[in-house]
Image 1 (cartoon, rainbow, N blue to C red):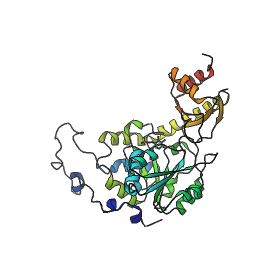
Image 2: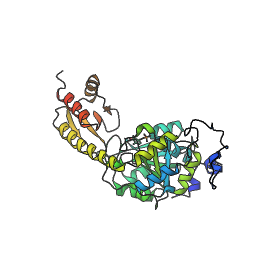
Image 3: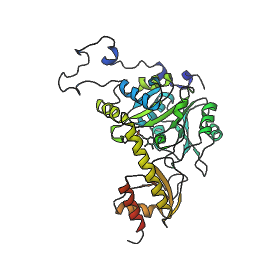
Image 4: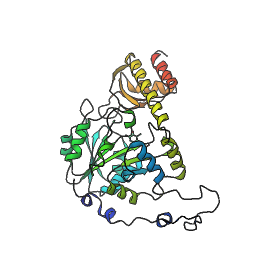
Length: 347
Ligand SMILES: *Cc1c(COP(=O)(O)O)cnc(C)c1O
C-alpha cells in the first residue's frame, strides 16, 4: 500500500475539523449544559446527539466482533461511499475502478465528485479477476470497488481473489457487504485490522430491517476512520436514528430469526420459479434477492405492475439481459407473486 498521505487528497489531509461545543467539553461530570445554544425545553430532543455515536458503535462492536476504533457510522452506506470519494479522490484528476455490473451508487458518487469511473466486466459466472482490475488501474487510481454478495447478481465474490486484490493493490479496496448478513461466506471485516488499505461496508438497511432509519457502517483502519470522522457532518446520525439503531442492535436473535425465515422463503421461491415456463435461468444467490433470466423481462415486469406487485427489471444492466431481480418478502407476499406469475400470460 502507498503511504496513506499520498492516497488522501492534500486539502483533506490538512483539514482542521469543525469543533462542536460537545467535542470541546469532556471529562468532568456535568449537569448544566449552557454551551451549545440549545433550547432548555423539549427534552430529550433539545440536545445535540453524540457526534461520535459511542454507544451505537459499542453495540456494533459487540455484535460484529471488531473494535470501536475500526467503526464509522454514516447516514446509510451511501454516506460512507460518498466519503471515500471526498477523502481520497481529487476531482478531475483521480479515478476509481469497479466491477461491472454492481450497485449503482458508486458510479453516481463518482460522477457527482467529478471522478473517472472505470468498469471491468465480470465473467459469465459473475466473478472477477484481481489481475484484470489491477490492469485497469493507473497511478491515479485511488480505490477499487467490490460488492459481495454483489447487487444485482446476488452471488458472493471469490474470497481468495478479494484477498489477492487487497494484497496486490497499492490503493484502497472497498468491499460492500450490504448483504453479508445473509451469506455463509466469512466476512471481509475480519481482515480489516491486518489490512490498512481495506474498507468494508455494511448497513442496517437489509437484514436488520431498518432502511428507514438510515444507518450504514464502514470498517477500516484507525487513520481512515479518523479521516471519515473529520470530513462527515458533525451530527450525521440523528438522535432518533441512534436510538432506533441501539434498539435493533440489541435484538440480534430476532434478526437472525428473520434471516432464517428469508432464506427458507428464498429456497421456496427459487424452486417455484424453476417450474415457471417464463423463467429461463436462476443465478446462484447469497443475498435476500435473486436474479432470474426470463423469456421477456419487460412484459412480465409490466404485467406484475398491473397486478400491484413490483420487482426490479435489470434488463438494461451489463450481463443481465432479460433479468428480473426479486426481493424475498413475507411468505404471503411471495405467494402472491407466485400466484400472479402462474396465471401469466393468460389473463
Ligand atoms: C441496499 C444497498 C446498500 C444500502 O445502502 P444504505 O445507504 O445503507 O441504505 C449498500 N450497498 C449495496 C450494494 C446495496 O444493495
